[in-house]
Image 1 (tube, rainbow, N blue to C red):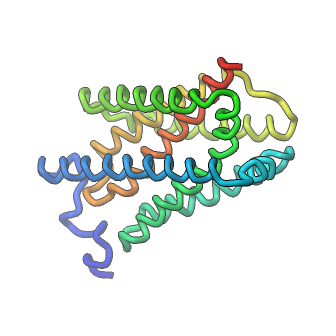
Image 2: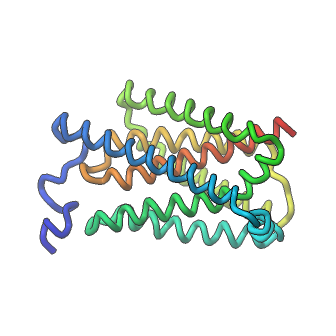
Image 3: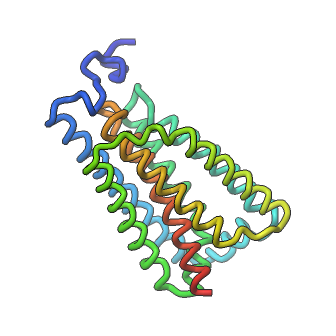
Length: 238
């Protein structure tokens, strides 16, 4: 395979941290532009889904039974893996965009029951939680960009935390046990850790041209943070 077919193997395809200032600035701009686009697409998709007649039947199907939500989570994990594989494709830029688009669509679907219930409790909860999410994301991003600290050392802890959280969620679904506010706060902390980790990767470990994959990673962390901030606000409202 030639360098033209696989730009990730090209000699000039360098880490953003080692690239010229103009290349690095262009890479960062593209990454956050694509992140903004992914968030905008998510908002549009949710507006369409939640205003579609019969959405309550979709919600009932997704969370109507103990195993229904477990199946939905399993499908989401499979689709997420496929989307991430496409987004990190070294061969095709169109495949990378398909991966990012697929992931945004999957997030929009899995968020539907939570947003549907939140809208019933209090429509103001959703924009408030969204604003809080973006504010916290902005603060964490500023911390990384100002300090230039490399948070890649957090990788093992984040992976362990993610697997532990998924295990608790599965057990809770199977047993009917309710995960309380302490779990929600812990997941917010985990999401903040992912934001620090992924943002530092943008500065230090992604290569020039991997802006689509970087945007997907950041979007995943923002979505996780939004999910649990929204749950926290819903619990407080109840």
